Length: 266
Image 1 (cartoon, helix red, strand yellow):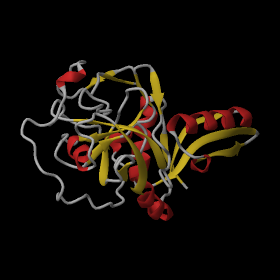
Image 2 (tube, one colour):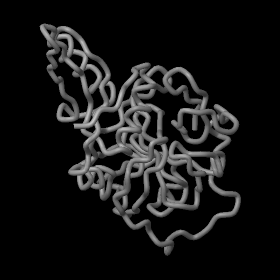
Image 3 (cartoon, one colour):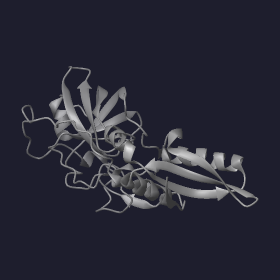
Image 4 (cartoon, helix red, strand yellow):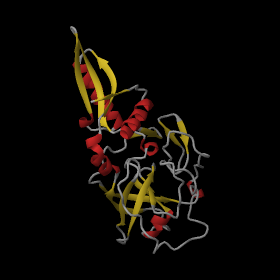
């Protein structure tokens, strides 16, 4: 949809393609170049996606990220998410370009772009003007136009009847999201990432709070450990516990904040 700067570093393409690397050719800024497929298709009987909780895709969940000077944080949890607002859609200009998840955008599938939901998530989208509904898989970032809460694929917009209107007022309801997978895996999470060792507890607590906020993590996902060697005490700032996969994803997010981390186990 637009030219995107990820943390002021990379130029990206696709609807938003928050991926941490340059992919393809930057899209044109002229929105009129987008549109429906040159040859339409009937999506009324197309099977809807089956909501399933899947692990967060590392590439699609960089947080925070910055677009047009605005910083966005991926939600630490999507549980109970609902929202009402304006939906737009995107079509042939982006067909085949990489989404934020690394998947090619397919305007004939029921997918969507959302600024802060974990990727992948599944939503029920209801067009409040006509009551029509569609289930979509969130695999991209956007929309970044003011006042819009979601960008549907052309097929999803057509399914609920606003493909010829451009925008519609919709209700979003979360159906499945990565948190359900991560919660189930929590008992085996034994890895911590240590980001600092300081001499003052207050400084350690302050650093922990700031880092958790930057990464969109909950207070339960960090700790300060006191260690005394001889007569010298220090305070270790650690994030976790994580599974090995969650730890690696968090390490990548820390690296994008220029924060080094070492792995420790409980």
